[in-house]
Image (cartoon, rainbow, N blue to C red; front, side):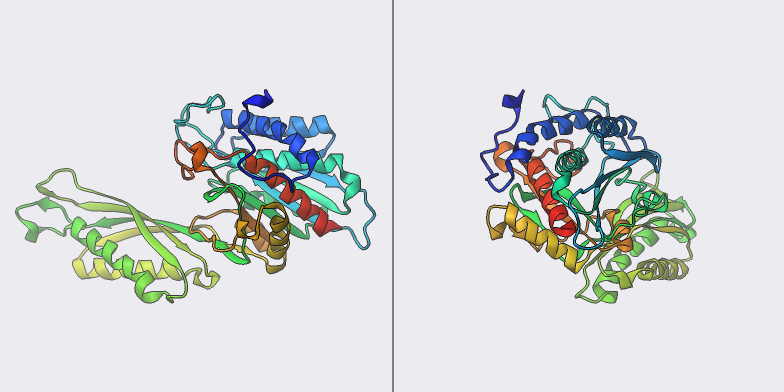
Length: 407
């Protein structure tokens, strides 16, 4: 029932067109249904089926089964273009996380151990609302809109397989936009900026191999714990002493395991870490430097090592012109110019970056936190939830971007 939906009085929705405000309760309903059925990457069968059923019900042209569970909807504007038809893509991810939900809400996850703890259910609902509105108002815009419902953003990554499957072709996409509901910003605000928005992410596992023995006789051993401790400390100097202070970067050791007993010197120590940075010129640098540090310390201490290092997602780099398009549109939707937040960079990563490497585009943050309603837990938290007022704002911004870009 509509009366069960959250109050919309906390944010001024007067700049959102009436037809989208009227659609808003339905968008909330879609989001809550998706929230109840979270699925991991490349396993989004129920989600994909629900999206396809809605698109078929509305008569929206679409293709399913792309990169396993991905969907692309195509909506052709019927307004005559003044020049060749432009093609704008809108991307929405749809996977969930292996998190046990702790929220006591009517729409809580029905899948044990799984939860939409990052807002992708909202992204999918916003994209569905955009598809519905554009199809119903296709006579109001020229050009073509491709709405990409992408699996597996949380890992191992669905953007690249969808690109390889040709989602940016036939017709060729001229630009792409996407959003992330963002509990680091209050509802009613938009975070958008040209250039780097989110970081590149690389990961590594390393095993330090020494020679174990009795804790009372360390001279007979090569202590893997001591070697690992030196490695951890030395890796912190890579950012502070090898990276230009103007360039933000992070090297974090998130896991370190060694030993079985307090008086036994461990034979091996296992560590795992993550690397984050914005500047694309740093591609390859951290891999080489980390191995140099580990190799040098192990050689000095008489230990050996096995390093496995891999890249996940590149940095999210927004095109200047498309970021300005989004900013100008968002400024007309939020209440005041103060609602536009350009200082919104994060060391979090996103595989939207692969799309932005192929075509000009912009990824932006849509504020979704509302502490007064208890909706301010961070992303990936078991109590994560967001102010659903943001859903209508997301649709309005997407629609205005289509109208401004294509017309």
